[in-house]
Length: 275
Image 1: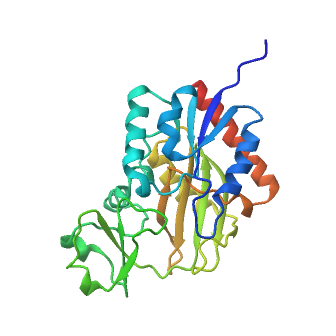
Image 2 (image 1 turned 60 degrees about the horizontal axis):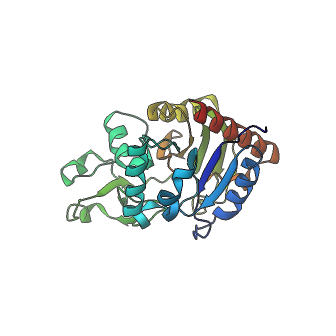
């Protein structure tokens, strides 16, 4: 008898209109490769809860910002946790998977992150800036983001909002990990064109910076993207720790790097299922 292949439910929103990215192309490529070793079905995030019982694991990939279907996502999480369903990435992530609270926690702990507060009485803790970014804790993909001068911050209703100084950064750079293994880095040389990315060769200090946040997150399995900006003084500051459904920009890396990533992803899934 042939060996039984693990069954994966691959969750993605192929029609999500991401700015500067094509989710569908990335997931078509990944699912084609994963089918070499897994039995796999693709579904929309709104269908995941109803379908997941028939699979060995649910793989959440480019499923779009959950703020657009928060009630359904919360129900999916609750059911998966209650029934012990294997979800990749695992649902105990401390980054964007749990909202933006981690930016406050990391600020308080002294990590190299853009300073973040969520109360008007803490505004004095932020460094001076020409403008300040105001964003929802549950936001993603720049949804709800706005920029305000300091004098308008005190009058905001702070329920569910974060405030950060607007950093005049030199460029953004992202580090991509599978489990705790670094895979590649990409950067956007033009700050005004976030998703026009080029390969980036990180220094040892750059990788040490990124690994601090991967270690902090304590995910044994999964894909993580550490987004950072190069501040005017040359230091890196964390922008986001994406551990829910990070877009991978695989079309921006050489074929050899892409193949190496898919191999690492496949091996990680096998380890996850065997754990």
